[in-house]
Image (cartoon, rainbow, N blue to C red; front, side, top):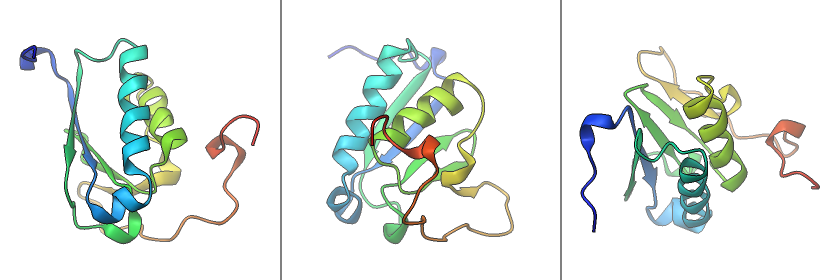
Length: 125
């Protein structure tokens, strides 16, 4: 196995794969996110770590982006790709899925609506 050059890493993502998140498809989200990081050539600047429980089971799958201090909720494969495209590559957090931002006075733990905006849907759905 290759050793990661940590001097190049700008962001570290923690991808919850604990039992509740796993039951909601965290494995597929993790795969999608990692594939998108690779496809966009960000693999040297972005490091990902699969974790067990991050303590927000009702909001999972959870992805934490550091050092940005952002916690994303309900990360399915489509959202995982958007996080990479919009946040990691584009510098714009995906506000519809931010559970918590470091220093914020509250957690946005509202459930996702049954009908998501078109931007949150897989093309053709």
